[in-house]
Length: 154
Image 1 (spheres, helix red, strand yellow):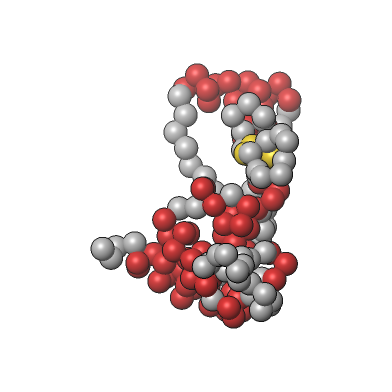
Image 2 (image 1 turned 45 degrees about the horizontal axis):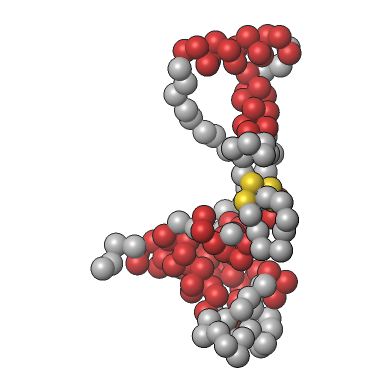
């Protein structure tokens, strides 16, 4: 079964070592605002991602200004997240993700349209609306295991 992420502020655990000065600053901010330190950290991370200065903004074709990437690629379902990232901003795909994406893109059973080939292109042209999510989720564990295993092959 594919991993599902709820997307809430505390559904995932992340451990990080902080300089003592930064931790103290977080503690003081927590006291100042009367909120738990974890809420301060979650808010700071969220603000950092959505900041146009160093955040998760990318240039996309057809857009005049950089676009906040997270809303365009986020999905609770891991395989759908991978497909969205591959379709919207493929440079951020990791090696295993690229291999899984190639298998998904080439697999006609994951797409509803038979009009997937561009006359000038050798690779199928895909869009998210044609994705057969149930079929992809059913095959996800095997697709991902194959993509990771292929990383060790030369």
